Length: 194
Image (cartoon, rainbow, N blue to C red):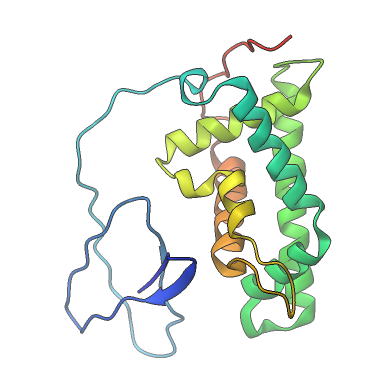
């Protein structure tokens, strides 16, 4: 089991048959299985909390900041190339390019869905921010906020910076969740920005 915390991907040691509990906000995954079988039992515990409309989660200024951060991440070609390589693992350059292209495709789908919702017709980026806020709330995953991803993003090869692995996996999760659930989310609220 791997967890992303303290700006690093860290192994979480455990033995065969051990159970692990963690907060739902912990970005986590497992290492690649090279032989045998892996069995997992996943249980979510907690209290149901009342659903809050996206308009209560972030104000329009914050939603615009999320949309702007996401647009900035998607415009950062060196970062997307590093993400492609991280997401592809050892599969090689062609797979890395395909992974980066997939992130771009998912982002274009999110922008198109935001445009179709006609929220803030004069400010289409606001609709992206509202959808991001709704996804973050829906999945109780503040680590998926693009402003958070932007802070964790690495500075590039040879430079001191953040944590590309954590940032890339969060970006991938956000865009995948958007692609999978955008049609199931409630319609966004109207904007308070004119």
